[in-house]
Image (tube, rainbow, N blue to C red):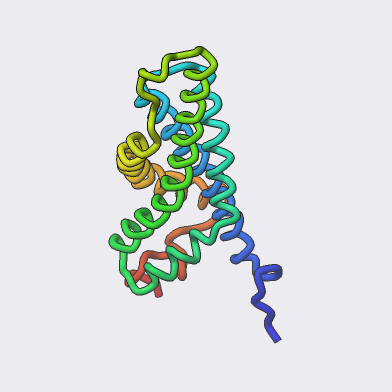
Length: 183
């Protein structure tokens, strides 16, 4: 009797390695880009702010990639789609998870830090305090657009790198794009 469990199936183990590589590569790259964008867009660039944002973003991205069911959700939603729609919709879904969480946490963190700095520095209460309600929608929209474009560009590149690294031939049977299976 053939056992096709993930533990004994070499192809499944290889695909787990590819998914692991993709989680790390995409998570870190998109986090760095979004962190840089967020700190620059705030109008208060500093190296410590950028470093904090990058650490928070990368940590969140890795946690999302490894602990939230992003892949099962996008696989279920895109199950009956054909390429390229499947790829485009999968990126929409993935970016909703990542951008919503990372941007919300970073924006909240830096608004809180800014308010705290105003209190510590005895800035008069007549000076308006930054508001999460004012900052978050704009930040979410701009971050989502940037993340979606970066993902569209980099994901195919990282997939090729992962396939080459783990010895996967994308033209092998079962690996070709839908509708173009080799016989």
